Amino acid sequence: MPESNPSVVHLCIATDQILANALPLRLLPWQEVIVVASDHFRLRNAARLNQFLRWAQEEAQRRSLDPVTSVRQVDLQDTGLGWGGLLAFARSLADDMAQTHQGYAMDVNVTGGTKLMTQAFSTAFAGMARLVYCNTQGETLEVLDASGVEPPIALPADLMTLNALLSAQGYSSYGCADNG
Image 1 (spheres, helix red, strand yellow):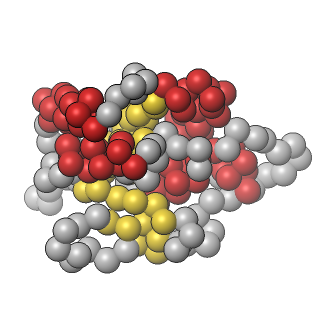
Image 2 (cartoon, one colour):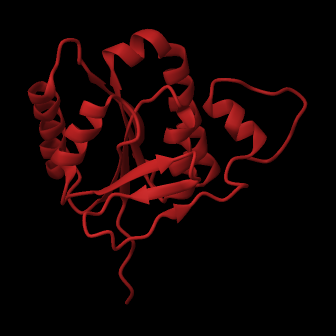
Image 3 (cartoon, one colour):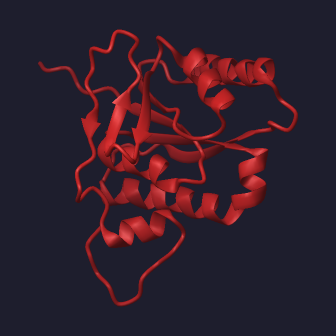
């Protein structure tokens, strides 16, 4: 009897460059999405963040993912946090996820946030999750593997339809049906 694929949780750090969060969700398998949003990001981009969360839920429904556990936001109160505080937060989240998501495969998209956030999440989730970075300029999803064994994944040109692209960025089109 073949083994069933494990559920996959996808964690990402919210970013002003929404495509860096959206493209991996179109490319990689997942059943649950957790978006970590900093105070700074939420205060400046609350509407865009909420639109992205709605888009991710619609994406799950479009892909008929079963079971879709959730698309949820985790708030990072980052005001005044330095390296130690960010690392403690990321480690606490990683420990919590290790308990609540046993048996799940995990992808952690470290593209968003500040450089310190990227480093803190990379450090905290190293060894328990596949770390990815969405290189939109290079049109690849880079797998951050210290051994360099896993090659980058090409981002197909047709990965995002017009409606998906607009929706992920908080816009919509009227009278344009592109099926996804």
